[in-house]
Image 1 (cartoon, helix red, strand yellow):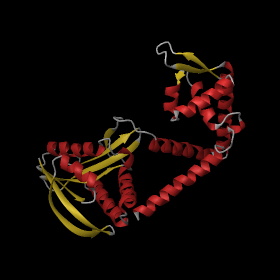
Image 2 (tube, rainbow, N blue to C red; image 1 turned 90 degrees about the vertical axis):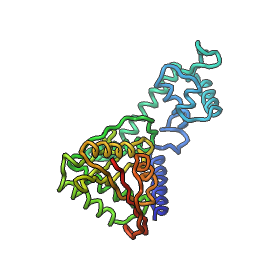
Image 3 (cartoon, rainbow, N blue to C red; image 1 turned 60 degrees about the vertical axis):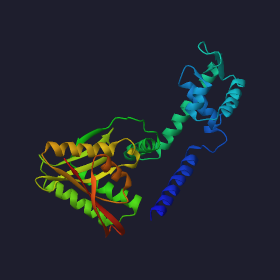
Image 4 (tube, rainbow, N blue to C red; image 1 turned 120 degrees about the vertical axis):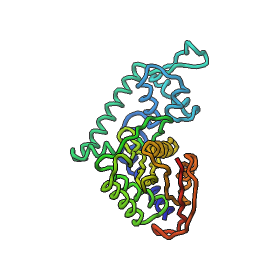
Length: 308
């Protein structure tokens, strides 16, 4: 089920790529009926954004092979659109810049691109354009590199967050493990009980958030006067590796100590290896395990605990 889901997602991305390249004319010999190929237009556009740049910097920025870029630059120089000047700080490097004719070409390309984009947006009702722009931002955020150490904040739950927790658990565990709707029902039951019985002095929900996007969540609930239970730890795939899961668990432990609990327990599954590593590093110990049939699969449940 997971493999077929992955194949479907791959097909969807490839279908979108074919659709969008046709839509903006990338496959045409000349970009936007200009005298430039797509690669040449990218070089002209990047040079138009700065005063000078070296060929090495340009190759890294555009992810182009240096030899291929050299040929592109040679052609643009012959057309008197690009000029080279020796670098005053490194004689082995040349500084690239657009000539006056190159800047005129850049201005024309920029105007054509803006007109083409405006024409695309005109095909979309005004009320839907904000959704389109938001979707493009989501694509850029998810596929772009996430800088190491990018800041995120932990915050308490707000109205609507429990719905997000239920939705993301149901969707993510179905995608990654093929679990059925009974797991989503269990999460909904836990979330509903948390809201109905919430004890602000002894229970907490934390959400990790970055620029308005939720990266992960966890609950700490009262199991008894002396025992707390860690529940529903989740970290979004694009946030894994940032330490979000470990920080959420550490926050649970810190709060449990302040609230006067003597022990924190949790229930997890043997196949959830990354989460189990987080628990072990935080000091939890596996106390027992039990095979069971849940969520449409044969699983091995594990009971862990941490003495405070």
